[in-house]
Amino acid sequence: MSIYLMAAVVPLGLTLLLTPWVRSFSTRHQLLDWPSGRKAHDAPKPRLGGVAIYLSFTSTVLVGFALAPWLASVPAMRALRPEAMEALREAWSVRSPLLGLLVGGTIMFLVGLMDDLLGEKFPTGWKFAGQTLAAVVAVACGIRVDFAGNEVANALISVLWIVGISNAFNFLDNMDGLAAGVAAVSSAVFLINAAELGEIFICFILAALIGTLVGFLRFNFPPASLFMGDSGALFLGFTLSSLTILEHYVSSASSSLFPVLMPALVLAVPLLDTLSVIYIRLAEKRPIHVGDRCHLSHRLVRCGLSPLQAVIFLYLVTFGIGLGALHLADAPLTRGVWIVLDSVLLAALVLWVIRFGGQLRSDRASSAGAGKVGTTLKAVEDE
Image 1 (cartoon, one colour):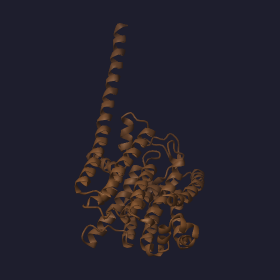
Image 2 (cartoon, one colour):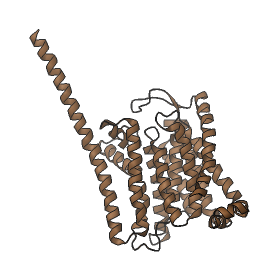
Image 3 (spheres, helix red, strand yellow):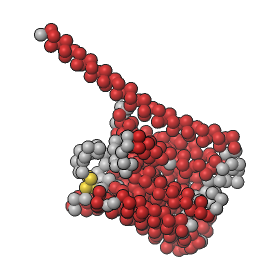
Image 4 (tube, one colour):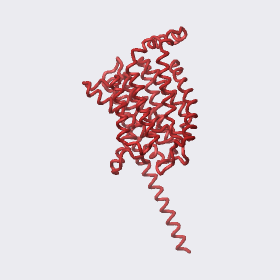
């Protein structure tokens, strides 16, 4: 892993340099996220942190791709990791999916940036069209699943997955450090899987993404001094969803199709958050795209956790489910069934605790309030 840690250092340093500049620029030009009824922060905060994420990650990948043949020829680098350097010599062979990742990511970033700058003036239909275009570009460049049986189905599933995960991270970006941290933990799990299966290019890209996110968390971890905005959240979701399609999950020891479920399990937190919020909004006959305080993190806070504790709890859930999912790559059929069942039960337990824990706390608060009212009335009667 040492060479991948080295690949993470450059974007980490870039993010640490760029983020303060982006924060200052946003503040100076009043590009701020203002407090409102559903937003917990008590003061306006810069909302263009996604610019630093995009620039750091994209520039690192581009420069790394350009320098790959030269790095592969350096004797010291070849001595450090011969097989990795041999793969870098063939970097040109992955230019098509890499182009899809970068061009599609740029389109998704620009869609989010327009939303950050225009707010409600940016039509939802245009936003969805831009997201779909980004996904179509990625699929056209070869970023597509291959398990559906025919090319049309594979392309459709890939577009739906990319758009869905992109929006899931946008939904998840509802509390300081949550989306960036969950993305970093998920990327680390995917990096471990890619390293075990010898997918060197994926490892380098994931390492660059982790370095970018760790650098950004320096400013976004609770209490955050700036937000990533839609530009950052959509870009993260696009990048991770595309990389999960490019990455492989089936090893020579695999005896079932369960490994293809690994991305969904590792990304269970954003998926659960999105599905539960959509269900609540539809049940209450409210627009899906209009924000509220019904996300997993908000409900954890209503259960009694602090915002920081809620964020760390969701990090741990992501890590726990992700570690279990790692074993799907070489699990026989029976073991694969148990791993999936274990993950589903853990997710169900989290949802149950959030639902009934919040309800119990609300009931206790109501009882306490009723007790105080009764005491006050008794005092009035005595007078």
